[in-house]
Amino acid sequence: MLQKPRSRGRPNSQAERERDWGRGAAEEAPSTSRGAGSSQEARSASSQGSRRAEASPEVGPRSQQQLELKVAELVQFLLIKDQKKIPIKRTDILKHVIGDYKDIFPDLLKLAAERLEYVFGYKLVELEPKSNTYILINTLEPVEEDAEVRGDQGTPTTGLLMIVLGLIFMKGNTIKETEVWDFLRRLGVYPTKKHLVFGDPKKLITEEFVRQRYLEYRRIPHTDPVDYELQWGPRTNLETSKMKVLKFVAKVHNQDPKDWPAQYCEALADEEARARPETSGPAPSS
Amino acid sequence: MTSNHTPAPSHTQGGPRRAGVMTDVHRRFLQLLMTHGVLEEWDVRRLQKHCYRVHDRTAAVEELEDFINNINSVLESLYIEIKKGATEDDGRPVYALVNLATTSVSKMASDFAENELDLFRKALELIIDSETGFASSTNILNLVDQLKGKKMRKKEAEQVLQKFVQNKWLIEKEGEFTLHSRAILEMEQYIRETYPDAVKICNICHSLLIQGQSCETCGIRMHLPCVAKYFQSNSEPRCPHCNDYWPHEIPEVFDPEKEREAATSRATKRSLRSRQH
Image (cartoon, rainbow over all chains, first blue to last red; front, side, top):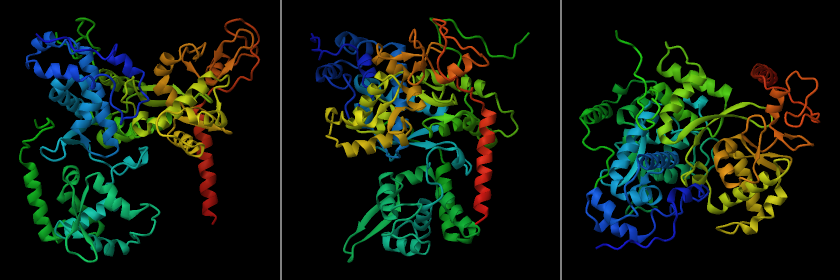
């Protein structure tokens, strides 16, 4: 016979949360994620809902409204987190939003993903298979005129990132950092000099873009002086494609993508691979 | 006989209002609207037209109010809405995407540290308690020692206050701070629930009031744009509650046409000047 878990004196998790709007996102969400007692109960109970409701009165049957509110919170959390372009970890989702609703996490995530796509046009995808981190991909194509009506800088569709992505692809998918600066110097962009538009280009390329998973930055062993290599990161493959980047490079040179036959073939092969039906969806890997 | 319109909403247990339909026009609009904390009506119309141009050039641009109501009916189940308000000083209509269920997952909470949020809360309390709706920089900074979280020096707090201004949570006027229309739109519910005794309400529109005019006899308050509308072309303004003479200057009703004329003439003057170099 399972004992009633000792409550830590929280009256109503929702009411408490309503007073906590000001809490930093780093703090644990109040009540629902604390209370080791209640989560243990949930784990020891069987997976059947009705028995769990009996065994763990704290969890209990949830109303339609509570579920709706949970999905709403999850949608907002994902939108806010993605705005910073940092991949969202599943552990953070569980800690800050899901809490007591851990048992139905896959369903909540699926519902949230559906709403995100239908309402906002964002697709929730896992950064890499089994990584348990997510990003939002825009199903709408960005348009140049968007820049005139938006309130922030938006995703870098043109500009420094695209140039670097182009460089990497044209050089065979990997490039040394020294080669990047050799090229950018010609455009008036230096690693040590502050740039009017890009600010600190070195920090942008080797830290910001890496953190956002657009680029991978790895040290090349046994190099003296130390050199690093740059490659496309997992977000780049999800947000854009070799063909799109090739078209960008071609446009910049006022030429046709076919003028680079090797890269064009590679881009075509990539397009074909993408056209094959996807096997992985937004559902988290168990 | 078949009807073309969709069936009436079901009446099961107060079932949900029949939600509108989202198209890419609405989605792009929402995406771009979200990049602004708050947006003036004229810019919202511009944004709407842009979205039609991108996705549906041939369609007629829907009346803004209907367009937004349609989106809001879809957003309802997500506990957010595009809320319309007005700036308290000159009554410009503004829009913001706000959270209806105040939870810890709030836009402000994700952008600021614990001590910064507490500084905002302190400033908010001073603003609400004040008679004018403004809190002086000095008074806010004096509370720096009481903040939760990491210790903050006054110099740092000054910068944080500027961050609030840049992000449109506060407005600064001559060293004093009041709430930006963005904060009022987003936090009205929270403020009314948290400070039920200190909060001031407008006698005309019954919304939260931070800045406004008050009757010196009976104490009722009104927003400046509400005063403007209520006493429009009234040569003898009297308090709607106690009928005493209204002692304050009656502001002008906001006129979007006049505003645009002024803005374009400023822009033309600027471009003429620059061409002369």
